[in-house]
Image 1: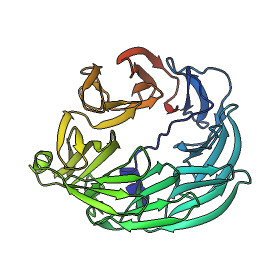
Image 2 (image 1 turned 180 degrees about the vertical axis):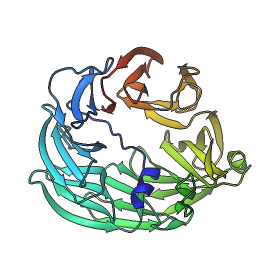
Image 3 (image 1 turned 180 degrees about the horizontal axis):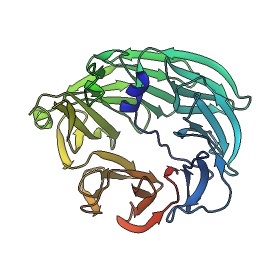
Image 4 (image 1 turned 30 degrees about the horizontal axis):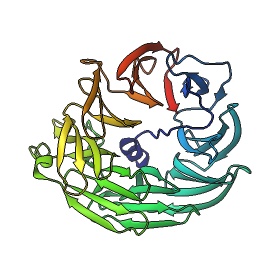
Length: 392
């Protein structure tokens, strides 16, 4: 059951890759029956740039951490709590550590011989690994179910929902030495109430999944719900609750909610981008309603809508990219519309790497490639098997 919760609440972990990449290629995994093939591909055609590849086993797989010098990448995911360390220049496997079940999520690499990663399972753990010897150095259990994990400078921060039902979440802060501090967030709610009826078409009857973001300097975190936000100082764990403006609540309060989810991006100082959905129950089914992409003021709780149709957002350089609605739109950090492409087309699945966005269709085998900085479509690509772009 906890695996289902993780699937409902955890977004895919995608992290930029530096060091070994050049301006003309991106790292990707092409999924085939014999296992995912990790390789460098052209940023504008998605075709392999050479014949070198590495089989990384079964899905899923995601970037967990990058070594301090940018030469190694740690890939999490797959069976047995798999953590694979790969040399980016040669795509050779340096180490393979199995953490004992669950899914390896985000991590931080402090030194060549110390890597702290999150293992999402039962229980949720912070695991310290020595990649050089493939040895597990220490495990630290966390109480709750991890719904989001972010790197904040040399820290790793984890948002934990209650293990049963909906209640106050906890924030765990993992320091560079692997020590863990936690604090309850009294101004926020998170969790799931599962559907008990076997004939129900939805696995949950209520869900609360807040947005979670970290400031660019790594000193603060924020947790965002439909009615309140909580800002946390990651050094002291002091917290401040802000009630959102009535204007921000207007669209949420029109109907009884079965649940909601939010995703947050920390933009300029004092400004967040927030996007999400609200859920209601109808005839045993869960119906979702878009809340749109909004800019939210951290100090006052006031907001303004940028794109009523968007269901996802990501930051590409200094451009806020809105997708999943009636077009692919790019905004400045201040909310000015910079470009609009693919009007009337499906933009529900978008991957980003470097300065490009890859709008996927056909089970991730057909892509429209958009130059985000230039605000224009620069090509179309087809792949033989489903492709996932990892970075840079």
